[in-house]
Image 1: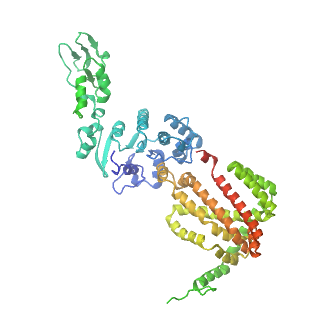
Image 2: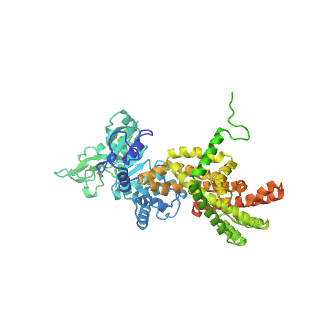
Image 3: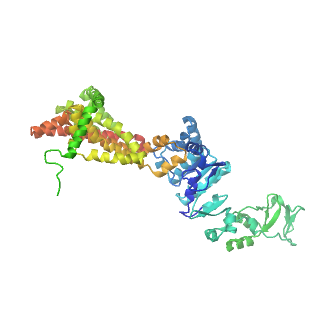
Length: 307
Length: 286
C-alpha cells in the first residue's frame, strides 16, 4: 500500500516480469525470474500467476465466458475443458447467468468479477491484484472485498494486493507493506504498523486509522475482578470455569458469552454491550486473559490508540 | 543564380535518372515483369468471368439481398433501382469490367497491404521505411503511375490494375498500422501477464481489436481503387472509365454524365456493402 507514485504497481509488475528490475532479484517459487528464458517466463505466467487490473482490461471482442477462458486458451487448454473451468470460475464470482453477454454491457463491478474469474479460472497459486477494486463504487468495492475474503477462506493463495486505500489494506491484508517514493517503509501486520511504526511517515499514514478495527481485544483486557459480588473462577491451569454473579447465581463457562483474544475491538462491541457483567477474554486454550467492561471498551474507543 | 533543373516540356537530370531506372528494369527485369503480368492477367480474367456469369437480374437481386441483411432496407432498394438504371443505360458490361478491375486491384492491395501494416505496427523500423513510401504513393499525381506502368506492362487491364493497386494501397497499410498501435496498452499488458506468445498476441488480441479500423482501411482502399478507374481507362483499362473518357474526348456531356452516374452507383454500393460486412451482427448488439 502507498500513495500514487510510490512504485507499488511497478513492484507488482516485477513479480510477473512485465517490468525488469534494474537491480536486485525477484524470487518466485525459489527461482530467480531474471534467470528465466522468455519461454520459461511465459510458462510461469501461464501456470503460476494471474493478474487482475484496475481498468479490468477485458477484451471487448469476447463474451464474458471467452474472456474468463482467455488465460486457459493462451495456455493451450482444449475448448471443452477451458469452457467448463471458466464457467465454474464465473459461477463462483456470481456471474453464472451472464456467460454470453459482452463486457461493455456489464457494470464496473460485474466487469471486475469477470476479471477476477479470468484469473481464478487458471487456479494459480499466486494472484496479483493491481488496485483491483479502486475504480469501483464504495458499496461494490466492499462486496468485492468480501468475495475475495471468502475465496481466500476456501482456498489459500498468495495474493499480492496493491491498494492506496489503507482501510482496504487493513481489511484484506495479513501483512501490509507500506511504500513511499519507491522505498519500502515498513512491512508487517496492521497491528505492528500501528503500534510500532518504523518512522514518522508510517505513523502519519496510520494516524487517522480506526484503531478499533485493527487492534485485538486482548490489548484492552483488564484483570478479572475478584470481589464478593462477582467472581471469575479459573482452575489450576488458569482455564476459565465460570463465574458467580452478584445475585449469587453460578454460570458455567460454556454458558458465558466470551471473546477470543484475537477478536478486533470493533467486532467485540455487540457482545460486550450484551453482557450484564464484564466479558471474559480467553485465548485458544480457554485460559482467562482478562475481562472487558462496557466502560473499558468505551474508553478505548474514545482514546484513539488505546495501547 | 539558380541553375534550372528542368526545362519546361522536357525532363531534367532527376527525370532522366528515373527514366534510366525504368529503362534498366525494362531490360533486366523482363522475366519478373512477365510473371507479374501473367498472374495479374489471370486474376483479372477470373474476376471478370465470375462476375459476368450471373445474368443482370440475378446479380442485382443478390446484391439487394445481402444489402437487406447487412445494411438496411433503404439501401437494398437503392441497389435494386441503381443497378436497374445502369442496365437501362446499356452500361452493364462496362460496369462489370470496372467492378472486376476494382476488386482485383483491391484484393492485391489487401494481400500486400495487410501484412505490411501488421509488420509496420510491430516494428517501428519497418514503419519508418514504409511511411515515406506511402506518402509518395498517395500524393504523387495518379497519372504519373501510368507512364512506367505502360512501359513495363504495355496497355490493357494489367497496367491499370498495377497503377490502381499502387494508388489504393496506402489506406489499408496506414489504418492497419493505426488499428494495431491503438489497441489499449492495458489489454496488451493483460495479455502479456497471462503469458501470451507474440503470435497469440497478434491473433487473439491485436487483430481482433484492430478489426474495425482495419475494415475502414479496406473500405477506403476499395473506394480509392474505384476513383482510379477513370484515369486507368487512359491506358486501356476499359469499363466505365472508357465511357467517361469518350465523353471528355467528344465533349459529350450526356455520355460523360451517364458513365459518371454509373460510377457513383457502383461506389455507393461498394461502400455500404463493405461497411455492412465489416460490422458483424454481434458487434452491433454490444
